[in-house]
Length: 237
Image (cartoon, rainbow, N blue to C red; front, side):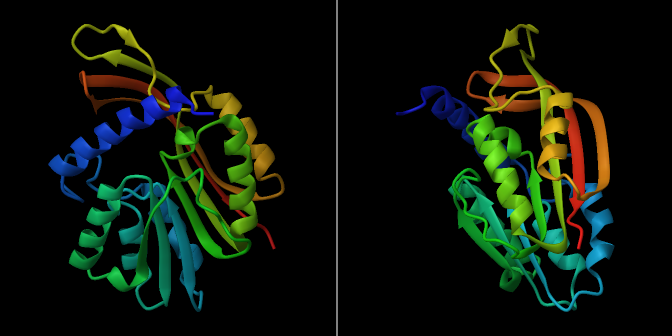
């Protein structure tokens, strides 16, 4: 059965990201594409002594995080599977990978994070930046977290950045709007789900920061008011 709510939300997000990717260059100063998530860079020393490295970037966009990861691990044979639901994002990812001379290490894949299959014990690092809240249901979230845990090699790391407790307002009037995120749960509830999924793993980072930022909608620019949860775990041997 078609879920028209999910389809509407995904059209809204596709519009938002298409506008951003057409207007902003990767690593453009002052934009949300200006650089990678700081926590991801701080995790990379864990991989410096590996003989090889295999990563997965779910919701990779145009390469904000995966390209700096490959750049930082030069000298190690690296490959990253980079998944995004938006064909434009993968087109621009490939352009950016070539621009920054990491194209041989980047596999761009057009697919939703819901549908992308994660093979067991394949990855040293799995990234999910602003993607878990866009899975199609809480049940899918639980299944995908289990896939991610199983997909990590021993001592592999998963790092997530997740919007929680989200509110959306018209920027001009301040009027409340329907939140255009498939999953919108409280920060505490999301933390409990993550802790259960990665029970027994070593929590490397747990941080919540409140943010307000603007994004594009077809009706105009809106203001998002959200907690941003950063959560990184290491799968123990």
